[in-house]
Image (cartoon, rainbow, N blue to C red; front, top):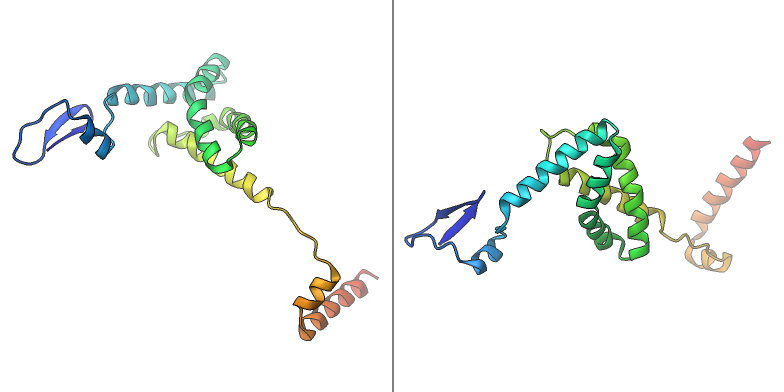
Length: 163
């Protein structure tokens, strides 16, 4: 069996490598265009450096390269295109503001961008949780007497301290 790693074929087992094994590449996740992916990561890293220097043209190019992948990530989390598009705009603003914080020694640039998008999307989901007000009848059925007494005591002590 052959495995492609960093653009080179490595023989694993008794058979020699055969470069035309697309099924194997799909199974192991090997990318036929691995050098292109490395070049893209390098370009994104350079663009982030230029964004840190406040180069608007570099930011426009970064947007062109990263936006489709970030939008896909946001769509997977938010499940609504309108929310994902709005989130993408906010994420790109954060990238512009924080581009000087990117450190190439800590990880790949696309991973850094995706983490910003992911955390933003999760924050959006937390903020969208609906708050439901319960009727007094529902609360009275759900609560027991001791719980009701403690709520009333807390409310009365809060009222006393406010006075």
